[in-house]
Amino acid sequence: MTGPLRRVLLATAVALSATCATYAQYDELTFSPSPSAAPMLAAPTVIPPASRPSIYAPPHGPSEIIGPPPSDDWCIASQQPCRTSSWTAAVELIPSQTLLTDGEFGRWPDDGAFALRLLLGYEDPSGYGLRARLWGLGQDVTPPADDVTLSMGSLNLDLYKRVVLDGAEVAFGGGPASGGLEFELSDNTHSRFEGGGVSLFLDGFYGIHDFERSQLGAVARARYSLLMGDWRDTTGGAIVPSTDNDTMSVAELAWGLEYRRRFGPCEDHSWFLGLLFEYQRWQSDWMAESADTSIGVSGVNIYTGVNW
Image: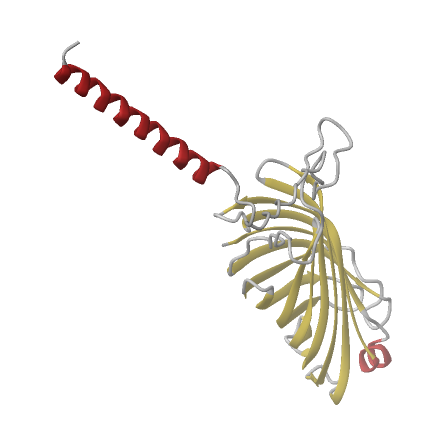
């Protein structure tokens, strides 16, 4: 081998030997721990729990829905029934029979009478309402004493509150009232009472059977009125003499069935049809003392109306 070639191979071997030594020293400095270095602390080992506790109670069956436990901070607001303001109008036709105790007129005939009642009212969504109620009756009879035309009437202005319960309604209230009563003889003379006062009432409805958009229910009504007034007489005292400051009490009871057909977005309006048996009793101390009588009115109330 010639001199130049030998010198090249020798230089190459020296260069490879230096490179290997440099890499060996770098590995020793980088990956070998220093004797003076402080030992590192190992991180704590976290072992996950075998099963994560559930915040819900376990189901008691395959069909039970798992839900959050009851809490004061977790609840669903109760849904209030949808109600809107409404007007009510009704007409009541009442074939009736008057009952007078035997007295001034002798035996009172069992002739039929006819009565009519009209009602108009307004009620707000909270159940407070105002309504007017007008009732009138007329009858011509022929008792043993003389031909008599009997006329009766009352007007009530009611302030009330309606409470809607589960399948039932109760309305209670009262207000000013007025009333009149007249006996007219065949010679056009008369004994007439006119008075005013207050009345209290209670109306109830209870659903018996529900249809798709209608309802059949039981109805009950009760009312009591006290009227202060005077008697005016042109018969010469033949029936009830004139007097001031007499008190007439009027008691009313009715019960029966009502059918309602609902309509409206909330189905809180309806047209209705009803059948009631009703009774009224008119009584005053002066009428009882002078004519020895009181007046009862019984009848069958057939009515219809609309609440819109």
